[in-house]
Image (spheres, one colour):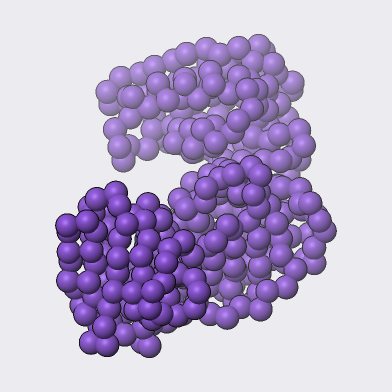
Length: 369
């Protein structure tokens, strides 16, 4: 095999493919990126058997062939080569020569025959949304997946399609994040659980264009994301997602409109008094036309008033401040609406059109303070 391409093109492809290279594995071939120049295209492929990525780059193929190169070494070599054309050639013994200007690297590759290619997925009826929208949806939900495997379903996000609506849901037992997106076309009903790791990696490599779409295909076992010249294939998480509809009550006794930035900055200031690992709640004491926010810790105490528009009852309620901060940081609206029932019932942050819904469970502040 012999191919020539610019450093920028090669580095772009390597940076995309390497997202599917596992950090730990008992199969050495999985630590490689496959360079496939067996056709008229240069493809870079990585696959950890759960997540697979294939991306195509521009370049000149002088001799067709396939070689698998250690991803870590290969990416570091490419990254540190001069900004010029790079030539990669390999012989039958898998000896691979990488040259760029005066720099020459001689490394051993592995046979592409042992490499695990992306599974061949039957693609029917794509769901299409803009790159920008998908990137935003992931950003606005990924923070509330569980970060451990005690319940695998919580480590993924629900992608549910009904007619022309896509609902994306994440939860970790203390909060729920929901985004509803209107699609350009109606589609058959589908419901799958996508691993959070897959979505995090897609978010990193998505260019985020508002003009270009991502085409999503779903099967019983896999989900496929296609954008520009990249294909991402992921296994789905098996199981039935939680029935969240019964948790989403529209009843409330207190409704508050409040400036999002003011609330976020106030809670953020309050956390200065909370050491990492301390479970000190932020207490919201809501009366007439203002909300008093209070926090008390071993370091000290803080309180601050924020003007609000309130409908309904006065209420005093406590929350984990991090959960509120996480939700507020991803909401783009200047003004938000909070719905509450009592000090032991969830608080909802919900837009009028229900484009987003964030449910946050309260904490018993009397027991903590």
